[in-house]
Length: 314
Image 1: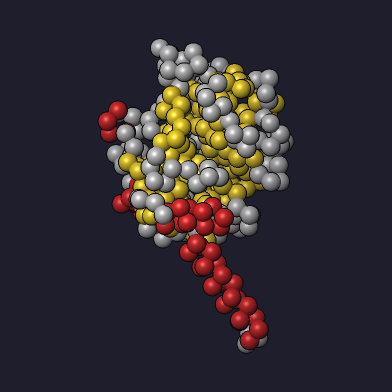
Image 2: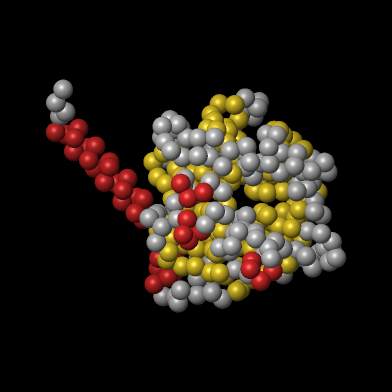
């Protein structure tokens, strides 16, 4: 059957638009396990900016969270306890050390999740001591939530939800828990693996990256599984290993972090609800086998970063 010229033109336009969108896409990522690097790359993996963290000096290997802020600065952790806000010309403008501040001196504590919130405070999940705190620019606690015992104090990804609650991933016993501001459990889903990441989707479901379970699963508030990929991605050669960061894009697709999968599978990929992979990011030389955290920058963020980099020293 012969396609109508208008249809062919439309398909061609959509293809070009998709390629252009990916060409403009920037990726902010952090890797550990010998690389110990925070970097901004374009969609093809070209490094536009990078910072070598102090992992090799301290023996720590942690990059489990990262965030581009509205002002174009980057929030990341230099090691398991110290969070840093750095400008793109590499000036440190804010730090917080969970090993020494707000009653933690002498206690065993690790930080795997943090976020600058819209009100300007910084949310920090402190494993070991088992709490989530929100601190102001001076490090003073503005809010605190106690985490449940039984392994739930060993967090990975944590996000504050639009309703004011906190969605918390705990590696052992492998459970995703939603807490309210009173430290009460209001929802919980046992994934039963060393779970890493979870986000609340626009439709109200929860998307979970099972970490060591090598899967991504979407569950309803009633805990019914409605979408899942496990071990491999259908119709591709992508092997899932340690699923980590998750993002829901405006087009409805998901971005999945795929850590420890070796040099034959992408470290990050975008997948549709029809389970079609539409974009892959595989930069083993730059990030090695330990790329756990990433942020796909939207158009506005990408424009800001490119503008700042044009006037900064990399």
